[in-house]
Length: 233
Ligand code: APR
View 1 (cartoon, rainbow, N blue to C red):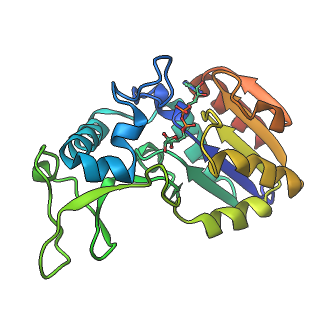
View 2: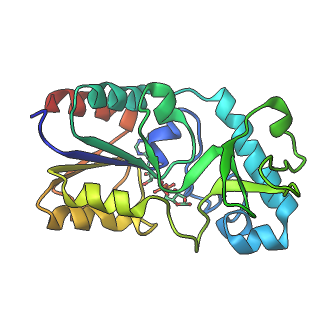
């Protein structure tokens, strides 16, 4: 079993029990904002102060939240496996803090900020980096205002080659806490299926792409995932 190639894809639902809000709550808003007002390149052009302050609030929240039993169970599971790839759509660092050091963050990370001039990103989490004022880079001759290191709607997710390579070779593909609304992440289950992998979902409610899975477990990730992963070892 330890030889099995496992790929796990997580979404906002895995961090919900840590107190991080998911994107598609009942009101259709993300922390009181429409996604298109804070999570698009156009929003950054139209109202950089709003976008910056929005992400600074999310960055400050990172310090207050803790990994939950689902993150911890995944870290323990990964420790016992030779071939495992953990991909997350989440921009928080809860997988890392639980012990998954090789996590692929396909939608970027809150901890890092990116220079628009050089494209370089750097971890900027000092107290002075978390205020509402813009932060400038340390990499350019003429320091530039940094942007959130987040993949916004309309932008290309990160590390897609690596992601497809892992999913195309998977024997087991597990999705945890994702609504199946956002592509290409929502389509990875089909890639895994075509590759002959068994596909398993753990989610609070049936997501849009629930039919694509061989096994669906409905409930809270923190309650279901530890037992499911334990049974696989
Ligand atoms: N356990 C498991 N699943 C949960 C839990 C929980 N405790 N709480 C909520 N969920 C489920 C919800 O039922 C929902 O289907 O998690 C899913 C979260 O869906 P979204 O909020 O749409 O998050 P996600 O799928 O990760 O969004 C994808 O959209 O806005 C963009 O870039 C952003 O990465 C994000 C992407």
